[in-house]
Image (cartoon, rainbow, N blue to C red):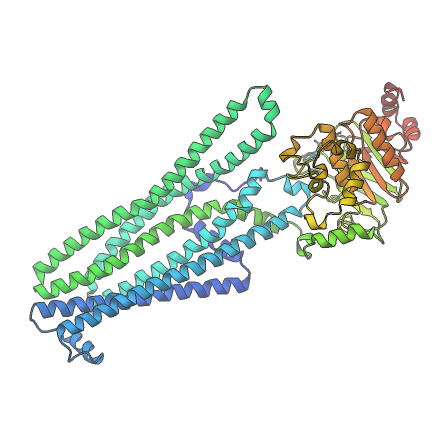
Length: 631
Ligand SMILES: Nc1ncnc2c1ncn2[C@@H]1O[C@H](COP(=O)(O)OP(=O)(O)OP(=O)(O)O)[C@@H](O)[C@H]1O
Ligand SMILES: [Mg+2]
C-alpha cells in the first residue's frame, strides 16, 4: 500500500458523498442474501418508530384530558370523539388519564425493549459479517503473488484485516441503521405533531434541524480530521513496535532505542488524545441539544400561556415536552451516529482499498478453491506424491518488479529432469532469488512460462502439497516448540513425530536437541531468539525436509553454517539426489560444484549454462571468480 494508499489529504473536501459511497461500498461487500437480511432488519427497526408516535400521542392525550379535568373545562371536542371511538367516553377523567398513561408507558417501554433487542441482533449480525470480511480478505490477500503482498507493510495489513474491517461493517453499517431509524422516528413524530399544531411543529423542528445541521457540519469535519489522525497514529504505532523488536540488536548497539521510544511516545500521545477528543466530540451535542430543549420549551410555554387559555397552553406544552423528551435522545443518537459514520468511513478506507485492489487483479484461482485441511496435507505427505514429477521447465521467462525500470530476470530458459540438481549462481542482485521465487509460485512470470512436472507451480502445489519445499536464507521461526516449527502450521494431532526426528537428523540438528530435556518440545521463542543463526538455518532445512519433498529449493540455505556442517548437509542433499530435484542458490561456489546444471546469471540474463567446468569455459567472469577461490 506504499504507493497509492487511501489518502488523508482530501479530508477538507470531505462531504456526505464520500460517506454515502462508503456505506454503499460496505453494503456491497455483503453477499446478496445477507444484504436482504440487513435491509429487512433495518426496516423492522424503522417501524418501531410508529410505536413511539403512538406513545407520544397517548401522553399528549393524557395531558389534554388531565388539564381539562383540572381546569373543570370541557374536554376538547376532537379528543372527546376519539375517546368515544375507543369506548372510553363514559369513564371519569381520572380513570381515562390512568388508562391512557398506563398504555403510553407500556407502549414506550415495549418499543424501547424491542429496539434494544433489534440493536443486539443487528450488532451481532454485523459482527459476524466483520469476521467473514476479515477472513475472506485475508485468504484472498495471502494467496496473491509476493509483489502484491509486498505493497502492504505488516502494520497496514494488520489494520486493514482487523480494525479496518470492523469499521467497514459494525461501525459503518451499524451507524447507518441508527441514522435511518432515528431519522424515521424524527419524521413520524414530526408528522404526528404537525397534525396537532402545524405552525409550532414547523418552528420547533426547524430550530432543532438547524442546530443538528450546524453541529454536524462543525463537529463532523473536526471529527473526520481527528479520525484520520487516529487511524494514522494507530498504524504508525504498530509499525514502530514491530520495527523496534526486529531491529533490537542494531538499535541497542547504535543506542537508538530511545529514538524508537520517542516516536512511540509521540504516536501514543496522538492516539490517546485523538481518542479522548473523539469521545468528547460525541458529548458536545448532548449539552447543546439539552440547552436548546429547555430554552425551546420555556419560549414555547411563555408564548402559549400568553396567547391561549390556560388548559390548551398546558396541553400543548405537555405534548411538546413529551415529544421533546423522546426526540432529544433520538437526536443525540442521530448526532452520535452521524459522527461515527464519518469516522468509520475514514477508518474503513484501508480495508476498502485492499478489497478493491485485490478485486481489480486477475481472478485469483487459489482463493476460490476449497480450503485445504491439515488432514489433507498430512495425507499428501504420507502418500509420497504419486503422479508428481519433479522436472522443471522454464521458457523465455521474464519478470519485472513494478518499481523497477528493467526486468529482474529476462529471457531465461532451461530444463532439468527429475532427480537432477540445478545451481543458480551470479553476483548479488543478478536475479537468483527471483528465479527461485518463480519456481515456487511466489511470483508469476510476466512473459514465458514455468512448468513443474508439466503443470504450473501453482497447480503442482495445489495437487501435491508438500512435494515442493523451500529453505530461505532468513528462516522465519514461529512461536512455539521445535516440533511445531518443523511441521510449520500443522496442528499437533497431524504432526508425525517420526518425520520430525527424521528431518532434524538430516538437518544435523537432532544431536543438538538431545541436550535439552524437552527434546522436540523445546521452545524456540518468538522470532527464534533462543537459537543461533546456524541452528535457525538448520531448523529451516528440517522444516523443508519434513514433507519428504520431491523438489527442494534452497536459497543460500547453508550460508550461516560452519564449513563442516555445510559439507555434511551438502552430502546429505547429494544422497537424496536420485529421488529429489534440488535448485540451489549459492554464493560459495564450492557448494555447487557438482550440480548437473549450473546457470550463471548476470543482471537478470543467463550468461552461461552447463556443468561447472562448461560454464567456466563459457564465461570468463565466472572462471576468474572460481580461480580466485582456488577451484
Ligand atoms: N520485491 C522486489 N521489488 C522490487 N525489486 C526487487 C524485489 N526483489 C528483488 N528486486 C530487485 O530485483 C533484482 C534481482 O533480485 P534478486 O533478489 O533476484 O537477486 P539475487 O540474485 O537473489 O541477489 P542476492 O545474491 O543478493 O540474494 C535486484 O536488482 C533487486 O533489487
Ligand atoms: Mg537472493
